Image (cartoon, rainbow, N blue to C red; front, top):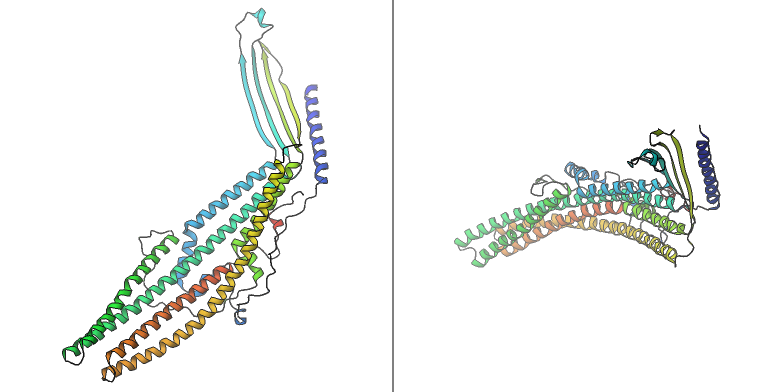
Length: 493
């Protein structure tokens, strides 16, 4: 080994040791508090006010909450949508982007290593005597280039951890998209089943009304009924017929919405008519505690991660006031030839340590800190508002669900009683004890009560879907007690 090579290696080693000592001294002087999870702006109650005591032991909103209806068709639709929906696929791509961004930020903590190589040749064409002062040269040069920004103030680490928090928020966005898709599929499915049911009811009553109009027409020919009675009966049948186009439109538009949710061609039928469909019975759903929403709802998890990310970016902005160290080194070997003389290969090195610290920038760094601090405060306020709205959604869903159950019970009794009155009215009308107008009034009341019961059952099912959605569906995304420190590493003051 030549003396020049030994001197080069000693210089690199000395510079490295000096850099390590300086970095350790500065880092030991920096306090690095942890980013903590935010707290709601108001204390949350221990239980939901509108959650009946009987529902406290009901079924929780599990990962496959849609299976609680025990409807194979609904389960198949939801599972297909979760695998083919475009919104979920878009959310997954956002996760990939966020994770790539986190990897890019993490790479700033490591040195950048590159390889350099060059070859040059110069021939002057001058006489040999002249070439002694201006020789022909051929040089082959190769080396390794190293560049490293020493993260003394922790700004790079803060940027890395903020990007990791963004990736966590994006992952929560995927769960949020899955929840929205599953709840929307369930909602459209029940709307479709309700439209089918109401269409059957209207068709059956319209047929009965046309039969009534035929009987009145026969009695009119026999002189036992008037033209008024005949026109009234036909008008009732025509009124029922006028309700069918709207129901058919609802069936068609719901089919296309389901097709889009499932990633299918909207021109294809998704769900066939099921005349044996029966509305599921009401059941208890455990709402849990309001504090559990912080870990169950994807939107709250994403908002909390956003709070941590903005807090970390505030630390990154403050780190701009701290000194920065930059290390660069170039180490390699050169093969040189002068005229016809081959020189022995030589080693070369170039090591530099640069120091930079702001002294005066007209308040630009302070302004950047204030801007980022305001963004962090805004993110916290957005999260606190989202928590209150989440509790409101659950409370409203619980209230609507309980009241819909009471209303459906009243609807069911009303339908039962009016069907009995219709049977008696039809018997009395055939015996001539009541006129046609009375019978038509009873038929209209039966139609109204049956349609109201069908609509009530739909609203009860939609209230269940909304409650599952408000509760966040699925299992907790993070374990209770998990703070943002798992997402964001320690950052400087």
